[in-house]
Length: 336
Image 1 (cartoon, rainbow, N blue to C red):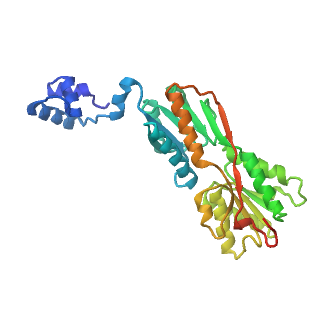
Image 2 (image 1 turned 90 degrees about the vertical axis):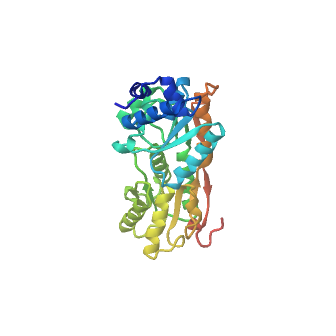
Image 3 (image 1 turned 120 degrees about the vertical axis):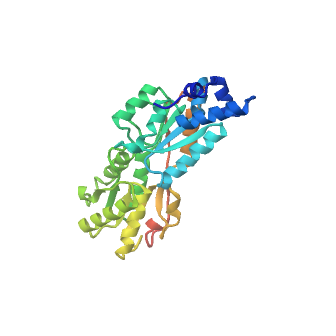
């Protein structure tokens, strides 16, 4: 069990108030008393917690953002929106990479259990049951982003993924593609399910439609490379690829380049998310862009209103994505 300020006071033979003055460097304290307190702190390995002190007023002015992978530019842009809005309201952000499988990576869940944060913004897909119970019992306000967790939330903010994916597939058809493959993301994530469903609904009536035109990925570049290899092995005459996110679409571009397949002349490629990397690929990548920064900003604004007991009655906020057409889908002889 960790040492407390009372343990320090007892060992040093002084009052708790004297220990507090030493810790905060406020008020008069003799050199002798200061030395005793500092020695006791050293012996007990006492670590004063600035956040814990704020609990006397029941507010820490700190919020936690849970993401699955901060290396994905989508989530770094999201985090920027959250942080800048939070800071403008005097709040601090704790960024947590969350792994549903649990383990030491989820030690930050204890921050929630100990009420060291005032609220949570959750953008990591799905909570494991153990962590869901911890958060539920903490009664801390939670706003979910993009991916809807299986638990009660104050507010859910997400983009219309079905509509955005439908725009992507229809655009590929408009560009002259007939045999379009889809690299879908993990199906336990609602965004990936919606994008796959849109692809199926658009393509189902196509004479060239086949379940073998769909293959899985995990939202990484590497999985996009492997999935593209699989699609080409199944369908050498493939002429379009819709990837469930931009990272997998970038992987598709790499796999096609390595095989000497020209994009978009032979195969057109479209992604989803609108991350900044889509502007620097060769060719530049067509994508369905989410208002990612704005989503983060809106999430922080909404959560802070809950924390501050301000009126906020929007349970679900749905935003639109936009199709950004670039070189990776521009077919020869087709005017955009």
